[in-house]
Length: 331
Image 1: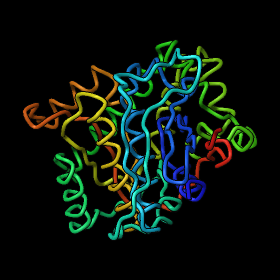
Image 2: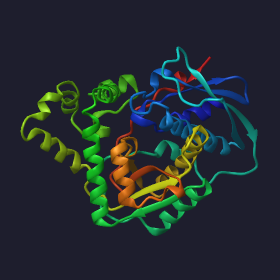
Image 3: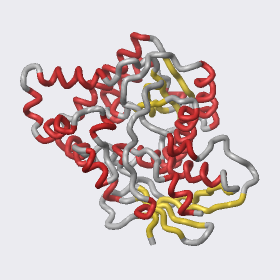
Image 4: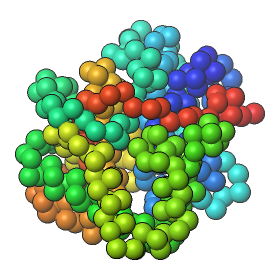
């Protein structure tokens, strides 16, 4: 059973596709979910907030696959206040237990495999209102509020903020080294390592990514920086809608629960033939986050503004490589 469930859960998305999880099977009904210190992001995510979100997605994907087989997954979380990137060995995040359940899930587990993040140009069409109603219902079930906008001025402003913040973050040497360590500069390298982002998934030529991260001074030459920014902005074409969540995001319980919510929201979009593209830098960069909160009129009394994305339809994007099931299941 755990082998079958891991085959689905290994397709779980994570920041920079770091895939920080391992499963240690204890019995037919129990397994330990571990996090791998070497696969954390201490520069960008020092507490591991968004990696705990990813671990929450992983748990929910296991549960979706289990429910199709008449079981559910019950987690018992370890007392983890922050993910420790300096730990010598993989550490316990949660004990998982399979329990029989008569109820079926709304989602076919094959949606977990079909799910993609699309960083490509979108088709410019608005997302149907009934889809937003589904997304709002998913968020509400987890104590979050769902917001969206198709106002062209606001959409353009958020796209520009995301672009500018990405390039600003790369001026920080520590962040640039961390991000660069998870970039694969050729499809062959991506296929060999089976993690990180390939050139095709990012929509940039591999040689350009390599030059940007290894010879960054060249991008200060007149005109070249602007050309790269324009090239990135071309991937945002056709974006007509942005959306964001506001809700509890104060500690590990919230972060993991938010991940389980995000898993179900992402599968809802996949079922409807739609994609999302997270704008994580606008959340983790403090200056950008403050600008975003002010522009969106965020009310802190409703909770934290913790996720912003563009939503829409595009051609089917490439799929990022994933670690094998055998490498996730450990003795």
